[in-house]
Amino acid sequence: MILRTAIATIYLLLLCADLALSEPAGPPVTIESAPQHPIIEVLDDRQSLNFDMIVREHQQRNAADSQIELSVYDSANQLALRRSLNTDAFAPSITVIGKQVLAAGETLDVFNPFFEFESLIPLARLQYLFCLLLESNAQQQEHNTHRLPDDCDFRAELTVIPRNYIGKTAPLVLPLRGKDFRLEGHDFYAHHLRVPLGNSQVHELGITANSNDFSGDFIYLDAQGHKYHDGPRKLKNWYSYGKAIYAPGAGIVVATANDVPENWFEDAGATKIGYPKNSGR
Image (cartoon, rainbow, N blue to C red; front, side):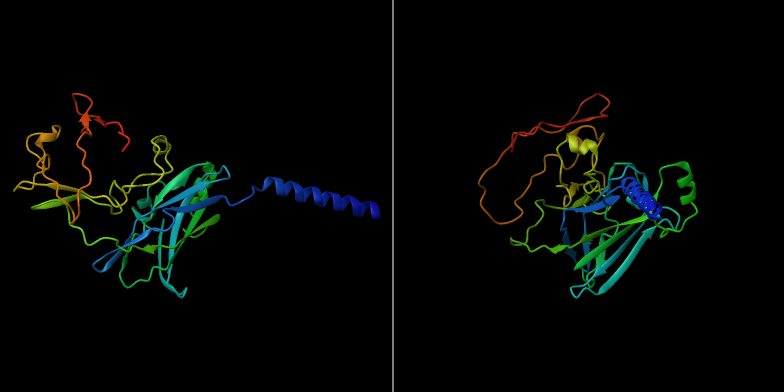
């Protein structure tokens, strides 16, 4: 009897050890925000939040994001708003975030899909919940097409504590004169925001943060609303080219520079843009 008990105990210990070895340690997916504490922009009756969510897969399995749920809490930790984006609709639905499938060991950038709020919504804490489905083979992919968005294989969470920006200077004005237009800003679909920090090509360029998050492109137009005359491949054809730039506020000029080369087209077909090398400033 004692021998049988000992054998059974050893068997259970070996089984538990085998399960421990077969089950990967740590969370399968982690998420972080970039920047960690994004700025709340306030304009008229709207608040906006522009930031990236860096999603990393750690267990060498493909995972598909089927739902992102946002819960907004006030300073008293009371739920103020809940929004969801998922596969339970025709496109764009969750496809608005771009790539949904996180390949084994991959890092994926998800641009915050809930980027605008009414001014009365308190944004003390934002809780993002990702619903993820295993999708490593054809059988799992087929099975996932028949599942509800919240039928998760596992979940990953992200807590974001945004901050209010307190201006340090007197109000500034655009350094332009006359009628101009904003060609592109930093809204959800703007290319300024779309810098995938997890992309290998972005890493090779040495980019670790998106400095374009708050950029804006402003241009001059003619009376008919045209941006340029003749063709766009010559810089001097653009109505904005050579226009004066004015000081955005009162101050003293302490230094100037005018030795940075312009961009250029590298071939006759104007299919590739050339960029000057960083001068070190």
